[in-house]
Image (cartoon, rainbow, N blue to C red; front, side, top):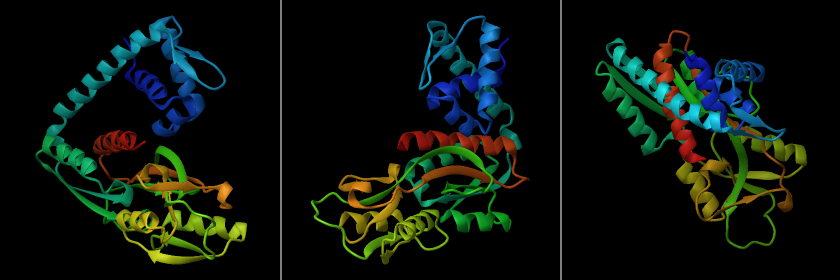
Length: 283
């Protein structure tokens, strides 16, 4: 009999394209992920992945097991959802950052609520730092958002580059001081941008203070201001500025899920899967 934990790790390594990203997504160490794959290969008696220093590929036996693994895990999720359906009662308060204020995610959350008649989901959109404060004050149960270079504990979901976005229209030189479109404090992208510019000795000014991505996009598309945003939030008409334009490299945006100690772990897992699927659609 296959251990579902080992199968989940196997699928995650393949989906994430590597052991380190799988470790982040599963909230495990890289050595633990390697151990899971080794135990699974010992159970099968055959190699499942061919590994190089930079990548790994499924062997023919790995391809065969992958098809079964996805089916087994899907059946396990369906059975668990069916048998625990009546266990979820009350209101789940979810805080999401601006990146997630999207109809696709809300439809997925609506489907979750529809599966559990006793469950109501309410959503609050805001800046991650502010949402985390609300969660610590007992006003939210789960928070999904991104941080930069933070030790705040949370379940790592994925990470992606933070970039300088500006109008794709032809330009000669960047204005000085550098006009920025920023969210108000405490925004991790704002802090990262201001910190990197200060370290590089580049003068800046806040040309536009925004409360939504629609405003950030408008400022950047018009060439009114440069916006630090996650790469997945680029839209047509925007270009990425970098070292060739004299701008410093920004840190990665680290997307994480946070929950209170008394949040139902089964329900947190459901929300995690919803957010991971949504995140995969962005990247």
